[in-house]
Image (cartoon, rainbow, N blue to C red; front, top):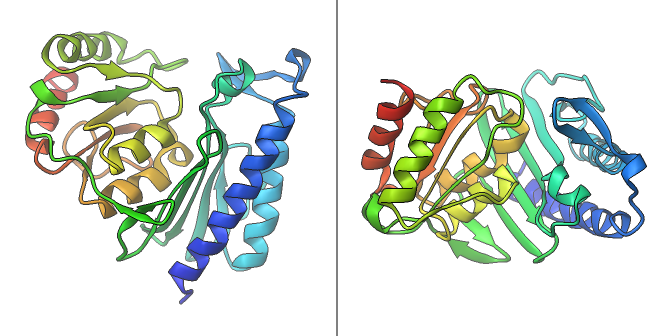
Length: 265
């Protein structure tokens, strides 16, 4: 079995290298470089080149591993180990020059997440963890917040850009939280949202329509920072199930009950 702490250290260095590549390329990126791979689902050569670099590096690091990667650079599926990769989470922000995006890499051993790293290059913040370890931000251990109720909480979410099946329920819940909490933020990178829950900047996060590469690293970060993660039915189908709620453990019961009330009446 690999040494997950050593693997994490290698992944940290890789994400920082990719983050520097993203910052260099944004200077020369043109609108003609932008493609639509689906409705309002954008991609550039930067996403693809970054993922190619990541896949090549991780293949050397753990040769038996496979990949679940956003841009489909590799279709190899590992028997036990699979990397879950988003080379650029927040592509729309990136294209428009909004300085908030991230590199997100997780490692899954069979059905268990065992490594999670999220790097936000604009603030040079690296969030990371591994199996049976605390979560860290730039070397300092982090924990979820201790805010006890929705009334005193700050939340984050993301808006759907192609899956509008739950839009009515989403907007009703959004309206409720606007009126009964300290606010709802929308950064444009689900990976960063989850990292911010892990370090206590946000007290909770919810979104639907996400893919595993959006959430994998963030799930482990929140869990190892003492947080709770659910799907909208209080279940555990949050990695592939396209529904996720993440919060601190004190707020968890109230927040998941409200989520169920609005999304699963």
